[in-house]
Length: 286
Image (tube, rainbow, N blue to C red; front, side, top):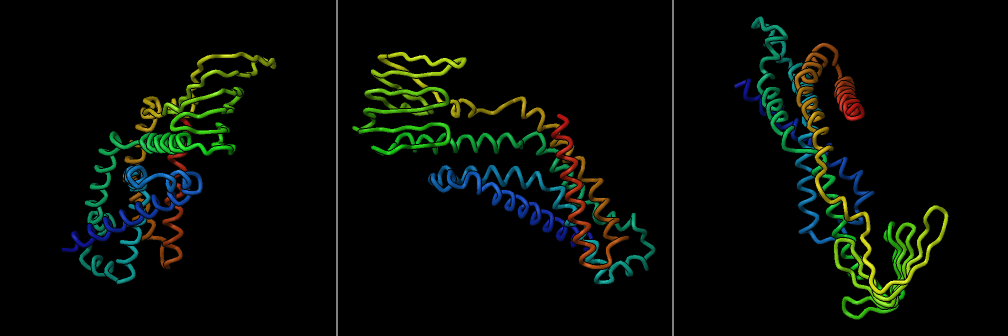
């Protein structure tokens, strides 16, 4: 009975903290990609949220376990249940055995997901959103207004269906002025009857064309990068292996050091910071 109670409390706390940390990180990202998320329909945004919470909840499992184990031990101390366990001649190592089941469960779960979930999946979903967002912008370029998407500046005199007439477009060091153009999707424009001005090696070159296709670079990276996945797999495994030592840190730290809630919060915060510093060091070294 007591073992099941510990399993429930630690599991609940672990998932709650992991989800909370994933949500906090998402709120930070909203400042960067909020205009994209809220500029697309829910059918595009919801899959991104699912990928985000699937990965980062898994990523923050060790941090959630630090909080779950530490709060579980402190609750035993606060309710004086430790004295009852000590009266049965149970050592701290034996008491840790009650926490071993949730620790083992999350260790195996993290290890298994280390080969399935990667941060690259989140990056891929974010790049996909950017493609959809810019597709919507380019398909609905307003007339007689300069449109600046950050990488592309465009001006259209007139629109007739999907045809753009008297269009000016600047992309990097390329300036195009054409009588008409059509946006073909995926960041590709077809220009008809115009001129192109470009700068190469501090020299300007002007050329006229009948047809000219331009692919903007932002749309060429919407694919999973295998090299990034291989590196992230190593970091994921380190993250999973960190479950056991940081669980021991949380258990014995709360058991020996924490006498107040403030000390408990310091222990949890310190453990999470140390864990994230470890992962950051691994990421930099790869």
